[in-house]
Image (cartoon, rainbow, N blue to C red):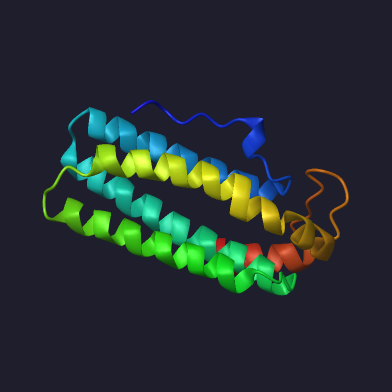
Length: 154
């Protein structure tokens, strides 16, 4: 699988979310590298880290949406839940020794890009208003956002 490169069309305009999305892309590329080397242990390790980070990102994103009273929060959570179940199946198959990486990477790459450009783009305006963000990238790590960041990322 080719590497997934970040492009500006994936930017949401919420810096903290964009940084988290970029980290997920980094994990996908690390997974691709480990798989390409045929390193099964590293592949499983990176896959588990990717899943752990992504679940934390989902929880963070959902908290932002909840605080912003995003009207489609329930639907967004459901999308995350369905995705999480799908990935858990891949994790199970990988733990049983199956090489799921090519199939998984293909699914993740397509899903992530579509999710960012679709589902995530839909909540941006609502969250930006709540955080008092007027200009692209205007992010403050104090106040509401800082407390939410600390809650999920320490």
